[in-house]
Length: 178
Image 1 (cartoon, rainbow, N blue to C red):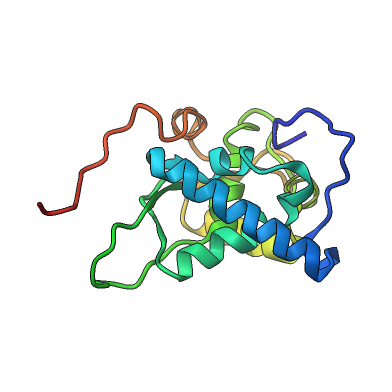
Image 2 (image 1 turned 90 degrees about the vertical axis):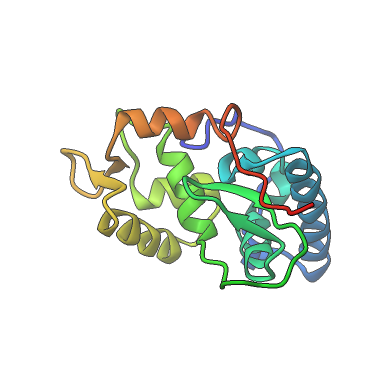
């Protein structure tokens, strides 16, 4: 399994198959978990995803993307997110939740890689979005095809190790002015 999770007996439902009530519950729960986690410090997209109950995983990328667009959280690069301290907006927030989730997942499959379908199934993401994200990551030079066609892995084993370690142990500058 790409995500590294143990199999669960709970049924994971894709966001598009959730009822309105399931979506509301998932969004409320995921928002709370992400806010609490990022209040402790920066975390990678994959670390944030690991906090989400299995039945809500299908909504994770939607909530993460919404928080990015709202300016509540920001990508610090290398798939790491942090809360944005309140201040006037100085530049648009640029990040892609699906790319960051896939980037984190591929860091766990450095030897064998993964196909778009495997990633879509394991991460509960739409296959078309996964294909677009893989293409963008490949164009940026962060991932590449393995010797098997249509199977992708991170371009650098060293980078994969850093991504697997998440945000812990990294140094982030405090941008707040006192």
